[in-house]
Image 1 (cartoon, rainbow, N blue to C red):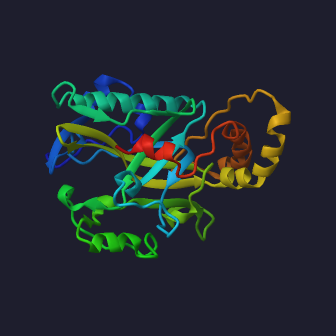
Image 2: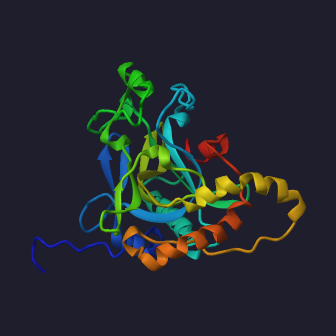
Length: 308
């Protein structure tokens, strides 16, 4: 093999690593300074970013407005946060299992009992994956390059005022790549940059996740970080919104047992015309399960699940 060649990761999907031997083979834990340890690809030394698909059950995302819950005295409110649900999809369940394996893998780097972590969450008996990225970083914890805050994220300069107070900074580590699937001029499906305000409960998304630990006092806290969020399909959100009133009126009268359906898991490059034509049907089927789930919207339950 040429000296400058690099072995590509076998898969960017989180669910493909539901095996301790695979995790040891492909990943390593690397200290990067400032009390941070990150999960890296063993071959290249790059940060490992792994993808998982699911439906948005809850979220706390920009733009930051006067109605947003952002309180510098409450650090957990200073996070982007998403909560994904996979319904009965087996790949989603495997991804949840991998999170526990990664937590255990990090644990091998620390003394017994020193690692605290965000394990796969269960909210109202629903299996979920929770992840976060800080809106801004406390100065005393920062080792990253600073960056300007985009107006689209902070139109009322709420975060900017906190940064100007010199207790926080905005860095490249606070940025998330928000993307969506659209059709280009040639009617081909492609990815494009998205405004974060388009994300809604019920949408099918693909989250790109990174993994790290942060030293807090005598402990190390294991975090699942949002690196990117791709809106794959928004039909579920549209249908959910249109049918919400009807569901509320019928929920007491229906009394039927909802049957599980399979989550549509796909990357943008895998979406073709035939699949796109089937999305509305899939969205309606999956909403049968979404209706049975609790309705969270930036709730305390979500923030408690993803913030330490």
